[in-house]
Image (cartoon, rainbow, N blue to C red; front, side, top):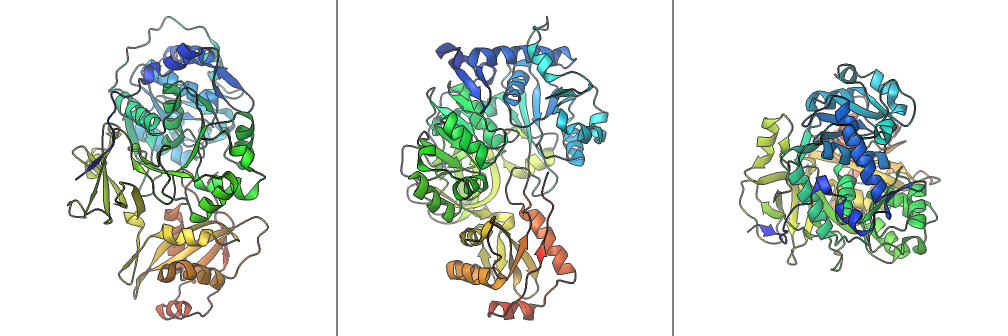
Length: 544
């Protein structure tokens, strides 16, 4: 039977998301960075002014507006202004290049874009931007056209703001494109309101909290935490960049009580900087989501902080359906229990429910599930079965109703008829003292089906290990799952959401297999028996 989370009375009202903060303490801090802050009154005023300003440009309710902005208070103001004006916000990853910008603009059919002036050359190189019916709105300096700061400061015009419509799309987020070109995930005021309400309830957020959304708010991960916090009157501590120095400054100066940080960034904070126990004492809990938390990170975090990391599970299409709740002991390695308003079903490939403790394919339902992929009915139909969404992930549920993530179905490596979860191998290799980041992929082999290849980057100042030593290190921990080949990269390729890009790694591996680096099945078998295959040092241009 499907497992249902606790029920909730209603979704968050995104149009009036600032009401609780305004009623409680209008002059209190609503959001802040290390260098600036806005009160609830100032934030509400800025949102109203910008909502009128956007409509004054010639936009109308229902229009889509793209944004190419870094993490700043202005991004939150922009999102809330779009919602209040009846517009659909289309956040673009700040690392997008012109071709990626063009794709997103074409898919979503936006009429205008708001962008930081430091991206002016990329927007000039974008054919999609050149075709927009309205000029770009610039932020952060002088650009040719309207300026976001001026629209936010101007007196509201006579344009009447539309009535709230919960079924109007409020966000179109783009997926990372790991299974094809990025698709536009559409959330309405209703579905995103349920996402915010469920997360606030699952995290037990109150008006006394200070939330740190420690990743890009152009993605759903940090944007949903931001709106969930604001909806209950909690304030925000906004990370402008995603490095340890920024996190440490926020932890020390803004003293957040809850935080969301990607595992890779948390690793850097714990390992390579002078973070101490005192820096984390304001936190009642920290969520590391978006990627698997390595066991080594769990241990190092507990040594410094004294508490466990709370893992969570979610997708752009559904929000956060599972979370290690703050009122129960953390089950390390689990992604937690079912959040309020969600239902979880684990099925066989043919659609039958599996027995408790059995691995299966994960389906999720609930009012927070996306309205669909924008202008892509085929992709929506392929992903949805009635109210249920096929996550494509392999999971199991234990006797305490905690969910355990077992891997992306399309990324499972099948070697000699055995399923190998790349994250198990990554978890083992990440504990090597020289390894900073690791990605594992399967490479086609005529004898074994697929062989396991690992790509690693090295910690600053670490000596370069021999490839066979890394393999031996992994074999001691995961046995037959250990990689046959290890390559060292100058930089690890990342997806738009900051995860290790296994699709890019698989393409790199395919290039090697297809070129002069190809190795015979006999060589691979010898390597398994302990002979040495030297891995060349490679480089990979990371996302800008």
